[in-house]
Image (tube, rainbow, N blue to C red):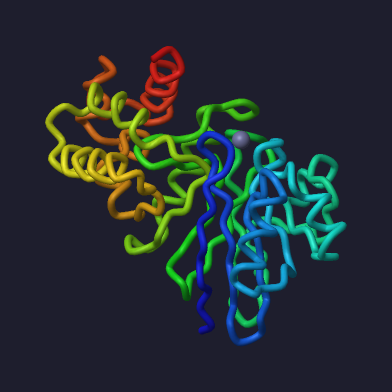
Length: 257
Ligand SMILES: [Zn+2]
């Protein structure tokens, strides 16, 4: 039942790199290091030694710091077996349902393809936290670069089924922009309005809107609500329409937004 301490590092224009520390063993991971320097600086400030890199997917703004961090710390690199050829420096290949131990803290690997074909998420049940890269965002989801709407919808449903209190650490600060689109989809959703007000306050104070929670996203994120009558109607479809079709139309409209 070991828990992790989480440190969020904003880098580039809108990426979040995250440090995870398991105090009992001293094991420390970084999730999706876009760049190495801010990671080294934060590790030094905390007095932590990097033991693992966890990559959710291969994009450069999630793996750009891998090789330099390996060179400087000798840490292991954990990534999707399906994507081993595209994860720089990978040493530990994982897939759906695998358990990865960060010291005494267990993480379950979830395959969540759609944004990329090898996209995975790391779920730490005892810490009530999931690190989901560019699969799920607050009030949005990743673009479908390599997957079908069907794949992405089933990935989002998998994330939606996590316990409602789960903290969702996504890879980007996109919430305000996503919210402008979400508001057009579900004008009358009180949970969305509450979230938008909160996001406005946080951003005005230059604070992150991440993490969010599964409960909050289930209530307010239109991409997790493609099987509701309200969202089907919003994209001009009959309630009861196949949610994959509703999701595909939502994603198409967001891409053009
Ligand atoms: Zn990406």
